Image (cartoon, rainbow, N blue to C red; front, side):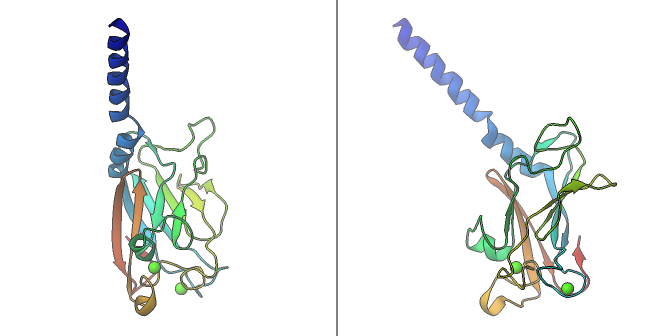
Length: 185
Ligand SMILES: [Ca+2]
Ligand SMILES: [Ca+2]
């Protein structure tokens, strides 16, 4: 009888841990992130060697947010539920550049992170913006540029697209028109 009671109590503890564990935290975390800018057009020719595209997110809360496994997709990837390959960027655990001594994967309160769908070296710039990169293959989008076109097929040259960010079970998106300029805010 005592053993059964202990087992029941253990079950209660495990359920409680599940309710307050990472999955719930991740849903709360996406609410803490806003898409603050999208560079949908590289200045100059759109090529695999000239690809400046990025999605910028900001932690708008007063607490750090764990951004490990943050996923970026365009409308084409989102519509096909693609989480790897073309037009996707999954931020690997440990890939976020952090200040010396800071906890891995934690985007500090108020901090800005740019996820570049192009070539580059991860780092924190003088303004404190975190930069991470995924070099997109030439076969993806238009010579590796994925945000300056529609989903695919007859829509390939559509003057619009949508950037999606997903963390855990929560997602946010921002649509824009590819009409003028280079960066949508
Ligand atoms: Ca261009
Ligand atoms: Ca696209």
